[in-house]
Image 1: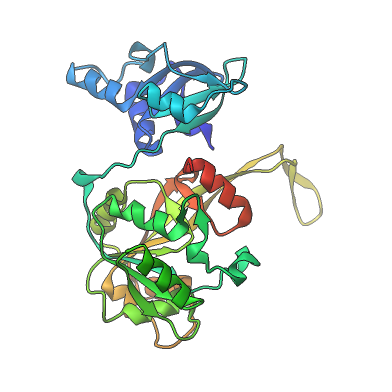
Image 2: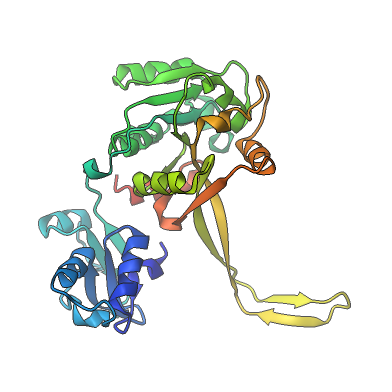
Length: 344
């Protein structure tokens, strides 16, 4: 977890804190001094301040709650139960120096009725799941369990919160297994059979005549914790033929880096630098026009289709999220992390 998304100083302006709360999408930040917890501020605190004609240029310490809830990391406390009992959804975890080392969030199964988007969702579920072998030799990746549900059910649930109820799933590997499972749990899904492996893009040709409107497109092993309506709104505003949902990935290198010239002379030295990358999550919004760029019965990756669109002068946009908004189940080491972050 990137704690910097949730931590501000006492001297930060209320306006800047409001922007940070909007960016982290959790509705709260914590006022700290060198990561030592001092206070908390929620979006509700700021809304009430604005209603009372507060000046957004004032510093945040003027409205902070200096008696925040927290627990220590060495306490034997069920944090989920603690949050439910105290009616809070965010809980900083401190060491004995009162420094925040983690933040827990309580997931609430709520419907975002005011943000209903109700557009079709296409789930690409035809791959063999080679990164999860040998388990996928027996169980197809869409049915890999994360807690009490499969990863695909978590994806469907996340879209249903926003009013989406038209689901299409492109299947190939162990497709009958997948179809049987979803019929038994009474999930209404329109299955599209991919007879040969066509890659992450080629299979979309099969929905070319079925989809006549804007759709969300997602791999079957990824999930985001974010307001889908905001992404769709920007996609429409920018007039994109497709929008790639991305995350900003920060990587800290544990070594010093040296830049040299052609003669081996040192130009610059950087001690343990931090690098930032924009990474494709495998979730997209696409327009019907995008599907016209997909050749029939051809193995092709979706990235190649995107490049074709770009070469043709079409708008391909991005929506960049913080790293903690993304859940990736495609690798073993990420599966346990996803369970913890989903609190299951």
